[in-house]
Image (cartoon, rainbow, N blue to C red; front, side, top):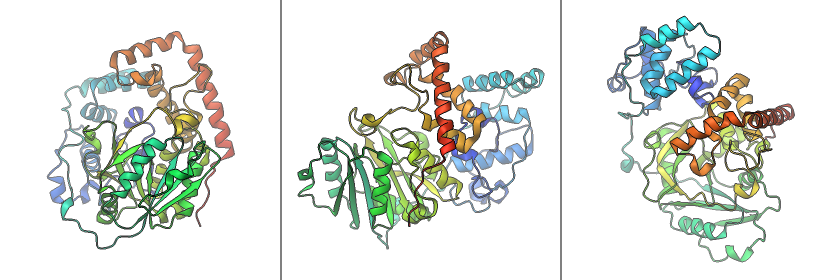
Length: 438
């Protein structure tokens, strides 16, 4: 990472990983002049930190076509790192980093000195102005390859009805739909009469990643479009995914999700950029990617982060994953069926005081790709925020109360963490369960 203090705030971010020996960040000295003119110069202690900041801004603001990438990162001063955190994150995070540094037995004099000297750092804007955005309406498709839409479903026929109805209205002419139905009881008659190239597979075992893997193996399409059974889409959804792959010569188009009708797309997902996530409820992947890196890891069955792990593999192998604001879906997040019937729907919140916190597959993913130290940093950041129930997730004062309440129940939380760590260690010893695609 260009600025090492970023790991304290985002310890399991894709951009911390290398891509075939290089970083995701462009060589700032090789950026086109018209791109550099759009990036404000942020004052740092050293000139190299200013250059790294330009590279960071370019990726965050939509520069995708970087061929000359940084392969070696020069270590920056502590003051440069504090300046970076102050520029792009709110004040509580700056204090959080300072606290972690002091608890890690860093030199207090050095830390406080750099912290104090960085106090006048001006605020930057991560996402404005955006750069290199295409004239979307002017893009035409001259090639329309077969797309396979993959939908695993479990006990959600009322919602699946709307999903299939939306697919009937798609303006893209060349696609098939594979539904892997795990419902009990299975309603075969439900699938009669749809105006779709529809293939329904019944799967007795209730297993999400097995369902997706099975559908991908059965797919005939050049592109695989991963979808959820509790979503709504516009008529140009498939078209917008295909256009993104063609325009950027990308390997993955990661669509965006909103949870309420009329809600705005979050700022960091509102423009095209190199994606830092892969959501298997709304992502189009070239089938060749599965052939090269394998299918989904079944170590995540009935648990969490299987899409995050697959996205990490995509990233490490150097495939281009573009965040696509045009391919939107309304994610209903219904309270029954799907993963909610098969396991936890939240990585860190537990159903019982005796459950592992977080879900063991989460630590398996963190430790395998980012190492034990970064996994511990992720626990320090996320566990205190997870004490209150999910419905209070965005309630600031109740979240703060939960952090203090955690002190009172710390023996229980420690038990949960140890249990999760041990179970994730077993997964690591077993190794990934990734089937190849011939």
